Length: 208
Image 1 (cartoon, rainbow, N blue to C red):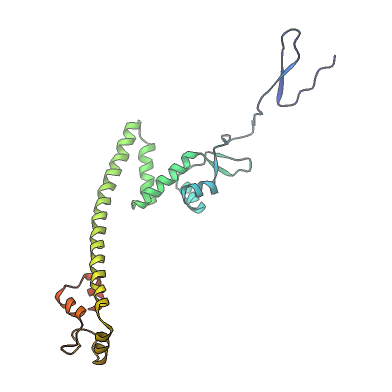
Image 2 (image 1 turned 90 degrees about the horizontal axis):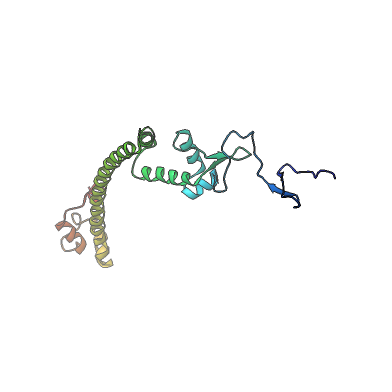
């Protein structure tokens, strides 16, 4: 009886006495691959950029700085990333939004990666985050002050809408462009209101 031919992906097992020959299919092994084999969950660089809301150029830059590393490479040598890369890129983006530069983010990552034990790394990162929290709160207060200044300036400038067309025409007829230039009795109600209110800095810097 001639021996059955086997294809490269099958091996023949010894069946029980009287049983038919059985074949079990085994996966091929690529012994030439020098990087981890890509799994089905990996992303190409374009997919990673889209998922994280960044550009491909930004992803390349993060790699150059050591902030990100590919998980594997495809047969065509394209970079492949696991799902953790999406979280890493978003982490970089959030720290950037908090005002941290990429070199500063590198230092945070270095604190974590060079720690002897996880608790030490967490303590180092926590210290950085606490400092950033204080800076963020200070910035928020500064922005709230600017918000109030904008609201006051808009309200001050809105008074021009209270002038009637007749009053504006009379001011123009006498050559007056402000309450100071106009003749007595011709000043509009808005200009009288402005004289009683202090000009916000965002207005005074224009009209002074």
